[in-house]
Length: 456
Image (cartoon, rainbow, N blue to C red; front, side, top):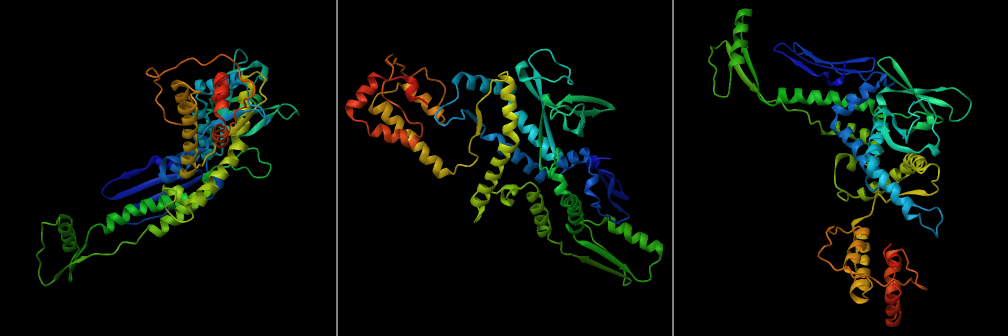
């Protein structure tokens, strides 16, 4: 039975059932007797239980989603491995278009999410034509037309070898008693938090297992606390009462309301107690700290606080982003490189550069100011750009410029090619270089202006 199989309630019994693997977890109050979830053995957690934990506990699932979003949100840039070269524009454009067509960013997001929840995320390459049998190896020269996610719950944590080569094995998918063998060349496997020589990863719920179970117990207990302490506790004492009189007193208690009263003799004593509820915050924080640690996430990020709210949180955020950038290189870069190589039919020789995850507001403002000053010189002062070219240049630099350029001028530039002008790429160098040109040089630059030389 799943954790989400939930609640059954009637007048005499309130029960919450939960199962984690082979460990039966029951939260039960029968005749006002309460029991606790047993933490059991984390090795018994099944994939169905990991999914149930993700669906049942919002803070942990929120932390998983934040990690996934952060890893892919800034996206990537394709480049040439040589420092003095850039990747061919046509190759880059073809790959970027392919990413958009197959929605690669969202598929990587899901694969990472599966890896965090189940320990392993999976993507499968779809050949361009033919070779649709999942057992058949595919070579990069075959090309691919799509990349799809594989259901992680059905992928087994073992492989089947058919030879001695490094790639001569199958990943195994099993569902409803049927096994499907996927050749290793077709599969991109993202394993989270491996240990030693492990091929398969470990779910974040393994680390957080006992804390998660305790947290679920606390969620249940909080409901009991509100039920018990959310209103006064009424007591009627009857001296020398018979069982029948006690039953009548109990019936009176059930009918009492803020608008009703109580009348009795000297044998009856009526009292209203206002017990104090325990403060759950320290216990909850203990669980949340452990859950955040299992995600390797700063506590304030896990809880949803804004950066800079507490002293030291900026450092925590920077460390977290640095850690995620390492995971991008180790887990996502090999995946994207494989996709690129198969899409280009074995002709991928570039590199994948992940865009920075953290640029503080001050630095971002300084960079945009430099770009704005540069465009002012190139457009207003030197007249080297048309209005439309200037707007597109600002878009390429991250400015939020509307796409509609129909109202702006697009006078053609001279067709001559530049001879001795070499535009720098960095914004600081670009601005400084333009500022240092003389009027004669600016005039010559205008004469020899070429779009590709200015708009990077």
